[in-house]
Length: 226
Image (cartoon, rainbow, N blue to C red; front, side, top):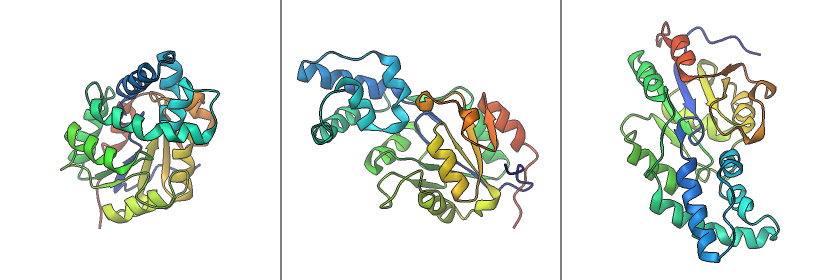
């Protein structure tokens, strides 16, 4: 495991389950689709757990037996339904606003690397009010590959003008840790996210957090250097 960088330049984050608690809106879209198709609505908790894996995993909770091609055919309607309710109940996790404020106060940059489709990511970031604050946003369709491939993380570093060796990557899924590690960043796993049924302590992250305030405290002495 790496040591915490002496001179951090910036912090990259996963979006859903790390910065934003979006599960209620994602579940609302699934509920509507189930009602349209007259199938039983799954319980919320199993859906919440898989949110970080994206729309197919969410839909699989309601349609466990259908073939993959049929499941894929349901995705466009699901995304339309989600876009209609996106940010109705989505909000930053407790402590995230303070963490982002600390990052900015220290003169550091922050960015987002998500597997969410770009048209949804861009709209959600604007609705939450982060559009003028975030230094870089890389979505699931920005490149031909997505996390756990390191390329999206490296692209975010490039766009934000960050040295990967002096940057942190924070996420609530093992794929975030894998992507960040492969890109050469200091990796941080969080316990407050959706976790996909996993234990962040088992993902090989350089640091595991229980609350955003722990990272804010770590960043307090940091200063940007040329």
